[in-house]
Length: 93
Image 1 (spheres, rainbow, N blue to C red):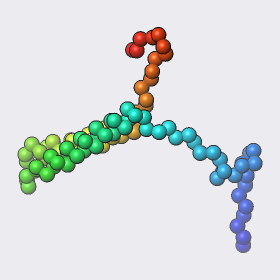
Image 2 (image 1 turned 90 degrees about the vertical axis):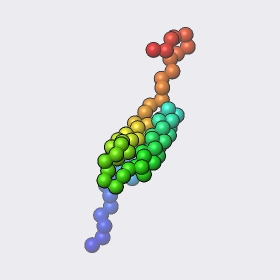
Image 3 (image 1 turned 180 degrees about the vertical axis):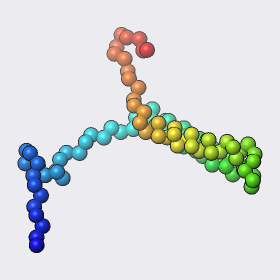
């Protein structure tokens, strides 16, 4: 038995020929926040090297928060929009 041909959508287009959705690039503010997050992540992994074997010193308590916080900052930077610029003659809020 042969394959059945795909049904066309209304308007004569097949589902694969539909135009892709517009993807908004990461804003310049977002890139700065992501860079900050990567710096915090590097700091977190460095602090992780300072832990003792039993995991009972300050570095053992601080490193997980730095690492997880850095991932949260990176995620925030991905979705952070560009800052709105007020029109000429108006004061920024």
